[in-house]
Image (tube, rainbow, N blue to C red; front, side):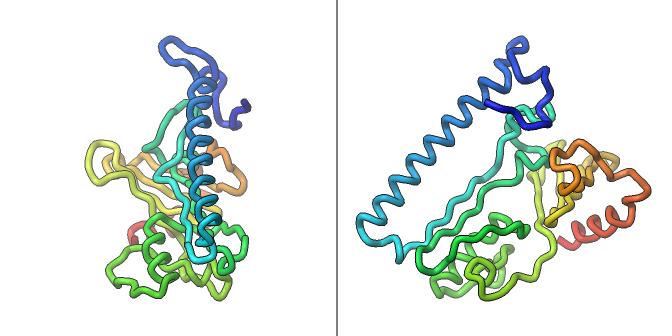
Length: 212
């Protein structure tokens, strides 16, 4: 088992009551393999019943897992390990295999599914219809995706992410925020939020956050 580059050495092995990231990830990846097996059963059943070309399959997750990155486990933080999740649409004969770095959110699933089956998409939905993008017939007009961690409690945070940059701020701690260049710093170890050279980008993304 290999670790991501941002998993510090002190958390990789047993440390007091903590069994360490290695044992933790063994269990996490075992759960992931279990999900893979169950998804395979569903897909096999669709093919056996000759329904695979009449069925839109959507695979996603509600959150990721830190797994020792930045010395943390589980979720609730703005790092990519916790917020970047799978979002896969599969419809044999309708959607060609392709991959996007478009800043989508889980709120996009409902309008996309409704549009795909020809149903009316209610205007009050927060998400966008990704059908033009995933079918290759057009684009979706969005520059950033909105992220939020709950609206109560002490550590509330909100942020926006585009294809390259991420800006997040803590609601109750105005001086605690992050700005990451994910192309240059994929492990999010260099916070640019307070550097004068990046103040213009920070202000632009802060305004986009306020817009959301």
